[in-house]
Image 1 (spheres, one colour):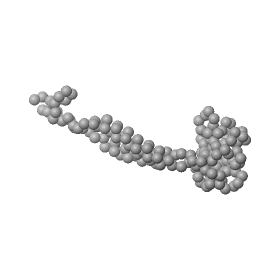
Image 2 (image 1 turned 120 degrees about the vertical axis):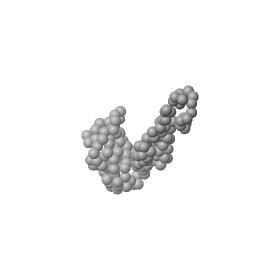
Image 3 (image 1 turned 45 degrees about the vertical axis):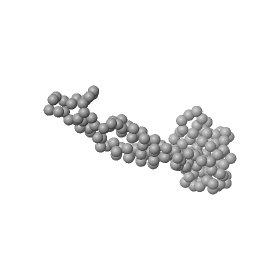
Image 4 (image 1 turned 60 degrees about the vertical axis):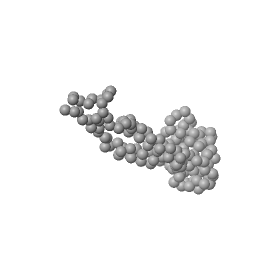
Amino acid sequence: MPVTRHRRTPVALPRATGVLLTLVTAAGCYDYVPLSTGAERPAAEVELTLTDSGAVVLARDIGRASTAIDGTLVSGGDASAYTIAVRQVRRRDDDPAPWRGEHIVVPRPLVAEVRERRLSRTRTALATVGTAAGVLLARAAIRGLGGSNAGQSGPGTNPGPK
């Protein structure tokens, strides 16, 4: 009796591929783009890069050796200060310290640069294409690049008894 082999095709693979590509696209790749003074708008995701004196003055509130504050701009229209709901504080020679949206008032003279977080379409597209290519290569490796070898004999095949 000839041995017939059936290939199993993973049903979950196409679904997992779609989910993975959706997650990569949704997460996106972001850049911080410099903003000119006065161009800040409330609810923008920003990074305030501190001056050296800003790091010293704010050390009691945000910790020693801080270099930048990331978060959501609550108000920036005031000529004297920014109010930010802090997501994280970056420190020299350390991992960023996460925060939970506490509001901090940062006087403008203590800020060296304000940058807004924006979606990088190019980097997101490249990440999506790279992920898709990786998934397709993995799929090809799992399923094999060639077709079925059913009915063929040769090295590595077992045609069964005759």
